[in-house]
Length: 485
Image 1 (cartoon, rainbow, N blue to C red):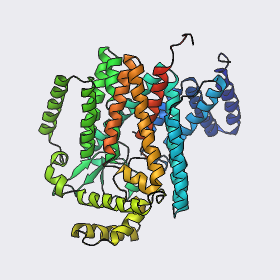
Image 2: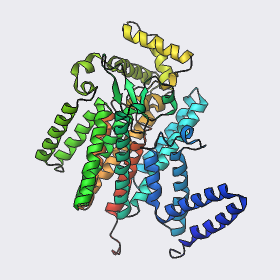
Image 3: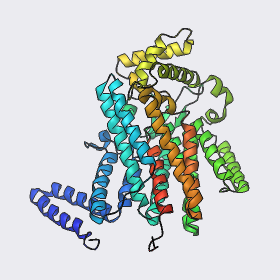
Image 4: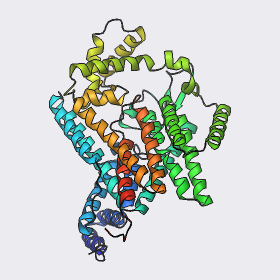
């Protein structure tokens, strides 16, 4: 069956080509491209995985429906094609699926999201949220299976992941350097998604801070994703010892690190520090070269001094400026909403409306926040804002307010089981896989720090990390090919 299986896409492609040719050249061209894509994914499933990863990172905005003019975004189309071909291939070739203790926790979380829909006053939002998390769960499952199919597939998947974020960082650098790729923070096009650095005029008086997004539409998400991916480069550096690959890897590290800084996301810089600290404590990063690289980077940025650099290190700004006072009230309001409905939650996308209801009843609100609320309500009335777009800037608050205690607990267990998979590989896997486990754990720890500052349950890197952990568990703990049972 394995010898004949590659003939299947060829036979199907021949039939589709003949049928499409009879219908016209445009349909024929589309049919041929579709079959070629399916055949490529069938022969090399990591090709489909690469499409999913890059369309969910560097091409997340460029590949959206309103830009490409298609009914499906590039991310959804690539995921659907990869899922269909991978499922058919797995059945035909009888390839066993990856197993991880994460999967029962994943199912439990999806059940909690579905149940929260009964508490949601907006049925359409409940349906949208459930479908969205189903898609993210499928992303995790496909990565776990495709990357976990073999050692080679896992290595290629790591290359594709860091390669995608390098492209994203390069796009972000272009956003910063090219004036045409700058967008005002109140530009309506940002609602659907647009390419460009977002100009922040509110953080520092008299300073225009250009916060790059790297094609992901949001500076914070861009910075957090880079934090999760950067440690994977350490594994690739050790995996490929030749001079040219290492030169490319060091270039990727430099671009991704610049991307973190130019996102001007303080929490991302802090989270990267925790990820690096984990690698140092695990003995994976030598201290002296690390300090030398950090010093060189600091001197370089100080000499360049891009507008807004003060946003990253100013203690006064953290204490008095920017979004700190608002975020304080967001956390207080989230705690109050959790106490109102600790078990059921309010349902997907319902933090904002309930927070503004709570906020309106609070005495002694600072004057600047009263002005913010009035301006927000004005923008809602004219259709430039929606209450649902207000988020708690904290993942724990997001999960508990929306999905109640069951949803928060299931999501937390999923994250803990991901870390357990990585710990198991460190104890029982080969040194090569133990290194990758430490690198993925560093990214996961950094991303966990980001939980305190962002609403991250539906960012794709979270589900990519869990998928990679499950794939690594399968590859590292499986007996070598040809070994006796």
